[in-house]
Amino acid sequence: MAELQNIKKVLVANRGEIAVRIIRACRELGIQTVAVYSDVDRESLHVRYADEVYHIGPPQPGESYLRIDKLIDVAKKSGADAVHPGYGFLSERAAFAEATIDAGLTWIGPHPYAIRVMGNKEEARETVRKAGVPVVPGTHPGLTDEEIIKAIHQDIGFPVLIKAAAGGGGKGMRVVRKPDELLSSMAAAHREALGAFGDGTIYAEKLVDGARHIEFQILADMHGNTIHLLERECSIQRRHQKLVEEAPSPIMDEDLRARMGEMAVKAAQSVNYVNAGTIECLVDKDKNFYFLEMNTRIQVEHPVTELITGVDLVKEQIRIARGRRLSITQEQVRINGWAIECRINAEDPYNSFLPSIGTVSTYIAPSGAGVRVDSGIYEGFDVTPYYDSMLAKLICWGETRATAVLRMRRALEEYKIMGLKTNIPFHQNLMDSLRYQAGNFDTKFVEERFQMNEDESQLRPDVAAIMATLVEHQRRQQAAQIVQRPERDTSNWKWVGRYERMHR
Image (cartoon, rainbow, N blue to C red):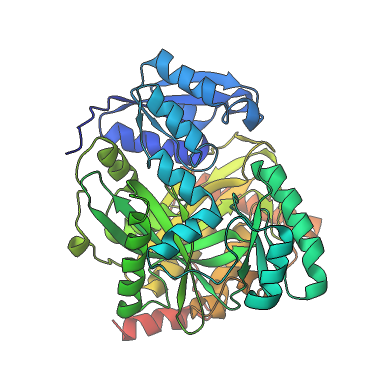
């Protein structure tokens, strides 16, 4: 029987929108929060919303948000009795979980053992494979470079994917389609993995062409209950970085969902997993699926699961850490509608998605039925080069996928962020794509079969001035609560709406 923990104050060891998200969940539960901030985050939203705030150093993550000693010291000074790591930074560092537990604090996350095993991609593959979970054909742990090369030529074949064992987010990853590219790709993967993770270990997997990236949300409590909260479609990505997620997946049927859900639960149970986690998979053209990796934390894209299941995942994380049972059983999990999330990044989609920095001069967030914005920015906020480029997450829900897409299109039109470049135009073009509307895409869709319609850099200065005037006019209208009749939509979108009405 798990011992119940009385969590009264949580240190949020993160920043940006996820810190705000955790603070809001704690506030609804009557739990006090402690925020930390670097020099450049002094006026961030998570600092404004928390009950207590502590400065932890300069903007460089290695001197602030990645300093375990500073975070534990803040937890002790503030009287916090629990730590939530969010995602990124130290969220998947077993050393941070161990330091938190050793300090007598409650860790709102999985056991350090599970973090360590699943954090090493090779070890994770071997662990779940022994539990009967299908994995992509690849090399075994502990091989030298020469042995990896031999295995590729004799057993795996080309094309092949070289991956960092301690990696994530596409770092230390190289696609090799020809034998003469292998040595240079392995050397590059070694260097990038060592620089990004401090561990240059690599391994090889068979490249599954035309694959979909599907993940299953897992919840597990200390009483032996492990469930999945359905799948998320994450195939819209660029250079292995996700851009758009949705739930459920357009390719899913009940049989495939049941088999993949059972696999996801089995993979989590292979390491006695507790708390929230995600099992990521590849699904090929014939709907064969393979375990890819496990993320031992809350995911960026968790809101789409929340909107279709009605489960608050952050509150559930805290509930589990308190030693309580899950608030929902597998039989109670139901799909309600469809949800899509667009990651709003400070990047220029017309210039190879180069990061953009600057001060947000205008910020108008969309709203209305079925629209949710998880954001860490506001008008006057300074976007710096020190952290991830994601500014916010725009999530739209609808009774059907067509409704969710239409609603996302409308919300993107309303979303105004000026003062720097964002990838909102990319998302607008994507929502207008017939392939996307039809659910006909894979992980290579953005890189190989998608193009932006118009080069924003070629706009004439007078056109840009008119656009800026229109934005300011719209801003004043909204401030005065002026409602105008929208112009008639004469695009092909009217046919999407008609089709949906005909098939209700």
